Length: 209
Image (cartoon, rainbow, N blue to C red):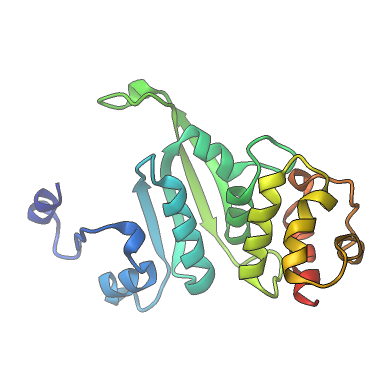
């Protein structure tokens, strides 16, 4: 396929082959689009369904650190799309929705049945758009924030005190209940009820330890 694309592509199109997960996307964008003069570019992709989550996290991470994308239009397995656009208190809400919301406004454009493809996959698909923008909240330590989110959602149905305690103990000498009080969060809430602002406040409370 790559060889065929190279034969028919116009001169300004550069076909790059390789493992996307081993690529530095910011360097790839800079090398492939020198005429852009660091203007954000658009991402369009039909992501392999078995790799869509790590690729999406890679795009989000690159955007947070380099701000090199304007928007993205992605074809995903419907269940992954659900996790991208999910709201707090929903079953699909978790790290993917939270980290997406930190970098972009996400919208499901259309859901596609298996019959829309040849050969048809065994799952339904959806097209999602991401409109990248600056983070809506300030986060002192983005790496700590992401670690906190991932840890909390391994215990999404536990009380916040029980879900937060194991992670807090690795970061701060203060009791988890005191940290939650400082963040203004009730200890009997569930992780799945926390919105982006709640999580940012909790992460920054930990960062001030």
